[in-house]
Length: 226
Image (cartoon, rainbow, N blue to C red; front, side, top):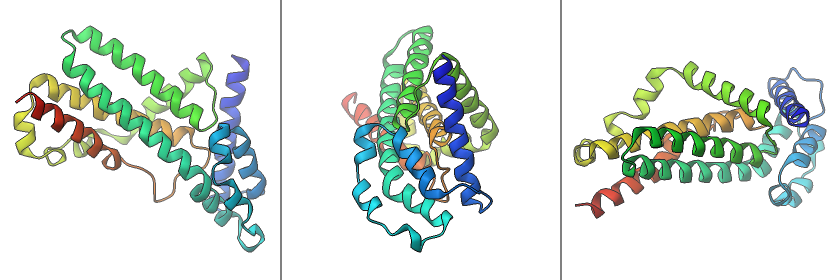
């Protein structure tokens, strides 16, 4: 438990240092900070494209540019894996809720799978969660989701998402499943933002970047049940 909490605090410290460098307020060397981040990544991800990163002449760039280069060359690969996991878990949430006849089972399955999703995303960014560090992360995720406001959720779940034609064909259970899937996706994206050691800039992934995969799954189910 202590080890997990230390890892969590250290990850938060790395993120604060990275943010300070991006804001041109930090005193930490960007290259050494990137090396610390790499040491925490899973082996297969840490080695991916590191040759290209190490071949760069970092002396030609300022601290903020080094952080951007690292995020683009190394962390972007982790981001893509995390987005695939989010799309997978979200699509499965749609199916689980649509097929489950009992609301209590829906809730338990969603709780279990969403916890698994948070664990997977944390592990991709080199964070091993203990019980209390998981509680702290989930608390931050929920606070961030609440802070985003209902307007963001309404915009993401509006009728333009699927089109009026498809919405009219959805059963009540399928519509509930779709809502559960979108909420799982939002939770996963917030977890990404919190676990990523270098904060996203303008290229932060949004729900619309993965929702089409969820929509395609729903559409295929609707066609099969015609």
